[in-house]
Image (cartoon, rainbow, N blue to C red):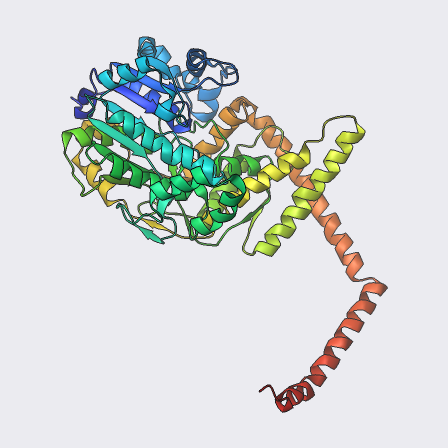
Length: 543
């Protein structure tokens, strides 16, 4: 590799101490990995809480040392480096000592004072130079009280701590491009708050669960869910409470698996598009209610992570100063649009080229343009078979789980419906201007320009990533998986032919013919009466 020269961004991070909320989440882990690999920081503190009886230090150790089954054929089959099968493997091979820079701090974003001990709070206040606030609940159907506590009060608590940090140089807040999704066109600016944030916080403190739940739809309108609503208000809390702090706001769109680094296609959860991709690949998700031709805005996770790192540097260095609030939209729609029609073609190719080992059915789903047709399809293809499967499981003395899994999938797909039926224009002028200020070296190291993104290649890589990291399958099994898929395809077509024949038999039977005759006779009589009915209506006095 050629010498790239001195990186301004990298040098700025030298010997800095970083505090991260949400560091164990999808974006948080990628952020930690990139900071360790590219930035010579002094120390990274992760806010963590004990989980299921496991203390924070053990959770931190598990995050770095989780092992998956080795796959010796990765490089030959898919172009992946065998040593890059897990998120932190590249670091552990090239510079394992940097992992010792990461420390877990016991706390909780939902607790007053972040649940920090006096000692930990003092340490953070004295040492931290950079804060990345990425903790949030991304559950679209979260109750209002929970969403306010996580997304709004969590931000308020982080700002309160940041105000005590004597060496703070930058605070980066992760919001969402959909915080103003009630608008079809969104610029990188702070829009008016739908309600005074303090008033909403008071409502969650005063009202009981039942009353708050009944009030929630009126509060949300015209936004679709508590996530987008509270994320919009969190931006206002950040600006109002932390007006004198060195803040910047990053608004990513729908965050998906990695594009380039550290591992192409890496993903660790089933949220958003990943769940759809896995559901389709397994043959479970066979219908999607979506508007034809709309632009879908997906962003690979490494793009906003690089933007966050550069944004923190820019806040301190002042190379680009958008006024009045530094807001950077991280999206693809305006530069590299992906329409729903294009996505359907890409998915059809990738799901069948790199199939999962044991699909439940042949992945032959289709988009529906009407709600009724989608619901009928889901009922016939998903819900009824799930009932049948649970009945069989009960007979065999096993726990019925098919309907529960089916309902969970349907709920997840329904939560995304709002975003599958609308078009948005997310302007990213600030982001492009920030990119233009970088040196060639920094553009190479902290790449967040998506002009080079090839959707077909990316979705193919994403499919492979889902196979490896979500389904825990080896890529060397692809030839056998393709044979299985071919057999399922034949069986699928035979079933379709049998169903078509059955419908034809029903429609061509004597009883069906009799029903058609009665129906059309009745319809013709009604039509023949329509002039008399119209005349009678005209004679009626409605005054």
